[in-house]
Amino acid sequence: MKPAPFEYVSPETEEEVLDLLRRHGDDARLLAGGQSLVPMLNLRIVQPAVIIDLGRCPSLAYITVENGSLVCGTMTRQMTAERSSEVREACPLLAAALPHLGGTAHRNRGTVGGTLAHADRLAELPAVALALDAELLVRSAGAERTVAASGFFLSDLTTSLREGEMLHAVRFPRAGVHHRAAFAEVGNRRHGFAVVGVAAALEVSKDGACAGVRLAVMGVGPTPVRLAEAEHILVENPFDADILRTAGEAAAQSVDPANDIHASAAYRRRLTATLVERAVREAVA
Amino acid sequence: MSKVEVRLTVNGAEYVRSVEPRYLLVDFLRRELGLTGTHIGCEQGVCGACTVLLDGQTARSCLHFAVQVSGSEITTIEGVSAEASLSPIQDAFHRNHALQCGYCTPGFVLTTVELLRQNPSPDETEIRRGLTNNVCRCTGYVNIIKAVAEAARSMPTGEG
Ligand code: FES
Ligand code: FES
Image (cartoon, rainbow over all chains, first blue to last red; front, side, top):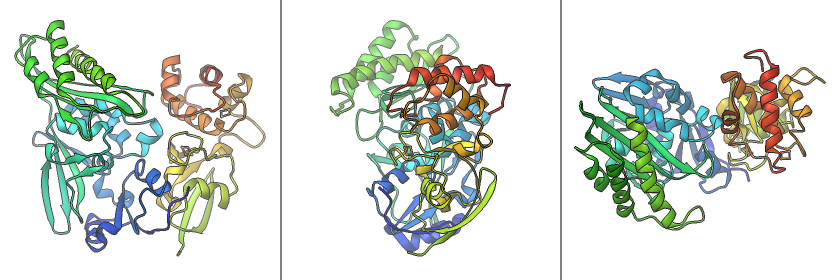
């Protein structure tokens, strides 16, 4: 199918983008990399009157490390972030998750901000943002606010962005020397949609025990969720097999997945246990 | 619906056309330029039949509007070899029976161009991972993987 007709604008400054958003409100959709939006346009799931293409606005594509954080502008291509040594050093969890996002062709074009703002329930970066307590920098004409990841993802395809607002960038805390991270996922295809994925961010103490841990799982509900029970079991303990297994079981008990055509609820629960163990083991390996 | 001007360099030649903003890159290539080697399978980014190189990187031409990539350079299957000859990758596909109906083949070939450019001697796992988002409904995957491995062996590093 072909998209319904729309008016197309491609502003070159962020100011113009925000002004267009203010004028058109909900009649407009922002086009970032288009790897999620264009299929929805082609299928006429969405039929906006106006498309505002962010692809010609260079000030939205950047990666900086500043004051203890890594900031990615919304139009940073996923492949650019994946190849960035700054990302690898400052935010290893993001670097670990990026290769899971889609095929090479999708990551070449898809953007960091696009996948966050799209907020698909099976997207990896919302789980990464939640695990790391990332901050979403949100702008509208003449205003700016910062939203914690825990308050940004409201439901499948739904964020707390309001009419006239745009995700400008995402800020991740910079990893310290004791930080370890891994992202583990199972899907039907290596780079396709996941069934379940787990993001693990750890702090390892000098004697090799867990000095801090943050876990988030996706694929078990309409948004990613933190795994507080499993975190509680891991923290201040050594990373031995028994502890990991107990933490995995606790994680599985704490989630409430549903059946769908891709997997049963029971399988998603099993995967949650397995992937918690796997992610933590990989992170500290 | 009002039209917009699109300017693209495709396989080295420059083209300017006026199309509706909703016109997909794949339709631009096929209908405006007559380059029908780029195929449409799913039109939602899943099958890979429409894969082209956009400024040197693989991209799904069904997931871009022509206007959005105006000013870019595109390589389609018609541009991977000189007229009436086969590139080393195409030749390896031919020799290994890596196509049956051929519908998916342009997408596989362009995906392989990028794969071998980034990793000139991939092992089988790396080839499988690199091709995982291209679908062949004739399901001749084993021969496709063989062809890519042979192409890698036959090509001087970096040639595509
Ligand atoms: S037609 Fe573009 S990916 Fe299938
Ligand atoms: S050869 Fe027929 S779809 Fe691949």
